[in-house]
Length: 81
Length: 160
Image (cartoon, rainbow over all chains, first blue to last red; front, side, top):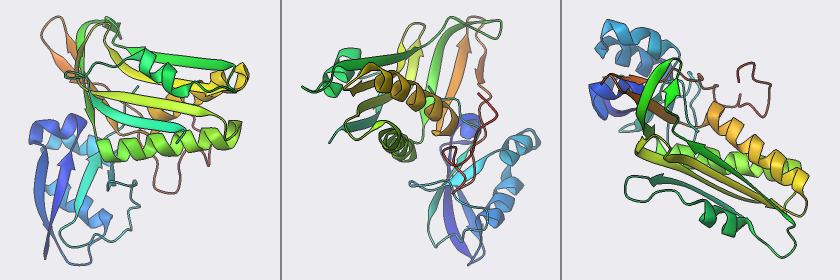
């Protein structure tokens, strides 16, 4: 297993600003999504379905492999401007 | 450098349109266009007293820079662009975003300014939490982000 950190934004903020997760080595973004979903209250599952994961440079594809000790951000639908 | 992008804590440093216009001036530029986004007192039938902006700053600045580079591809390398987006709490009338575009002629400046705000609304990681006069607060429903490599400059968005 490996430790990763998820940064929380928007409607995920009530859960805190970050969350620590453990995922298997070689896990994909899709696996991170599933592990994160397990920690969420029921009413945030629909929001997670329309959210994406990103690092500081780009929104990540679901099949991207997550490296050890990485920090990912979970991004709900955006409403800037 | 003819592009400036930034996420700024608006509670400590309010946004300043004159700073944006100064940045996009150049001797060869006959046109400057300015877009200001401000907190409105009413949204979807509810009375709003303020908005808190949450921003994933590194990716937001990266997305602003990409959008500005796309605008230069479309309307030429002479285009100067300034984008600053606020982070933190604003009351009604407070400026949340300032965009300025400077170019030799007005058409490019108007079009670039419009392009940058529309793309930011669709693509940049920023979230609005509205605070209502009745004491309630809600996160505004937004635009779902596209997958990596499938950004809006490669396909048309149906939403607006």
